[in-house]
Image (cartoon, rainbow, N blue to C red; front, side, top):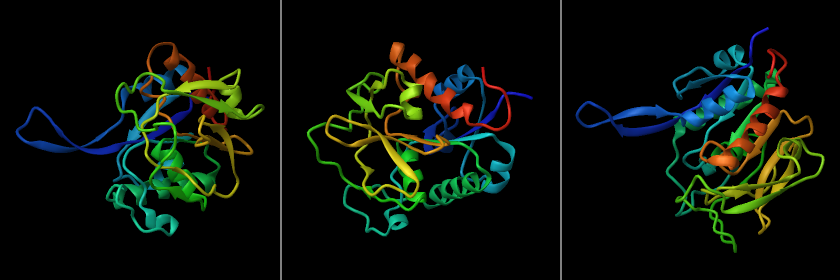
Length: 239
């Protein structure tokens, strides 16, 4: 059998191209492709025009990308002053992907916004504006760690980053509040902010940091996260 096919969702952006004016694009950091390939998978990307069920029928794993905040109405809250205006089409698409993946048993990894979306999809809630001793929104430099994450011993996440401590970047102003059904907290920042989660089978994984941005030896450690994701695939072989 071939290598697992891994779908990565994209971030809608208005960007400069070779044509006059900005154009609507959907972007995926190329480092996702490198990490997935090094872990033994084949990366593919889709924007929010895709049909969730049809896409999930064709892939072996799913990565929900970062980006703007999840619509607070999804977890029964009013939008706070620091929360982004919702991207309703992207939310609808990614919640549809998660629902289809759960029904088919497809393993998933959520990155930053993606982890928050997975939590909300499973009935959890979010803190819309963090206020802690640790600065969690450090946009520059985004390729270097700004704090450690302690991982729960024996968890799939700890095995991915043995010996269970990982240094990470941090570019978020929201975080998990109430945990979604069936999820376990397996990673914490020094201030107690939830930084990693998984389900009991290790088929649903979430990290609050951005593995695709880290560089050097810190980037090399992130391959273990994607190997763990691919190891949960029922189809394909993982290097």
